[in-house]
Length: 253
Image (cartoon, rainbow, N blue to C red; front, side, top):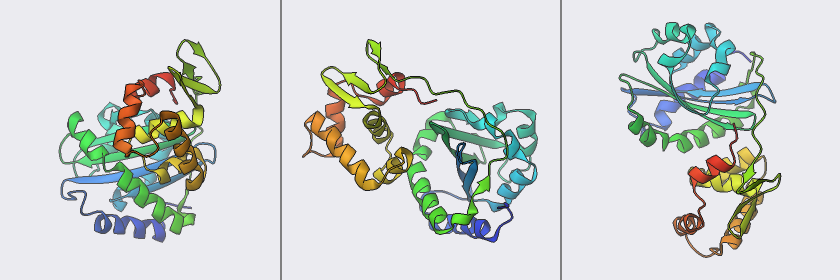
């Protein structure tokens, strides 16, 4: 599959029409990319098809590893090759990546704007990431042949072992008297990151039904089966189960 593909161009043309309620396209463009290192493929969605062509025609995918670090990275801090291609952006040279890693699968939510986006504003924009993600996966599921090859050889460090309070354990994380399997802990972490069940099931590599069963088991352990998600989060907090604690206890990059 080549970037100069009618299906990719058509999907890109639809982005601004379908997501116009969420973004001011006069001020910002969005790009959502999923890189699967194991399967060696890349799925990408962009509101600016011309930018996609420029990026791939300049072989920037061969420098992709530079972007595969969890967190927020401004393109002005990347290598010279990235600095050079930034000058070709219609909206100036203000571009930022928000990267998440799930074992050997990476997700990059990228924004470019007419001005440098303040860090605090990124959190507001990031709230729309789940909308873009769900939209992208819907488009990709309907157009399965739009996967692009991962050409760069990427060797990743092994994820660190999950650490339980007080000692290492290969199977569980404990919060007081409560214990959760690794998969349950990952589900909790993703829920606290405002992921929906559809997204979590993709990351976990299971069906939505299986993920719902896992969630119900988590609620049973917390004794909050009949309460709202907001109330369930409050119960988690009472037990010391927070996003910050899970990021510390179970690093995945």
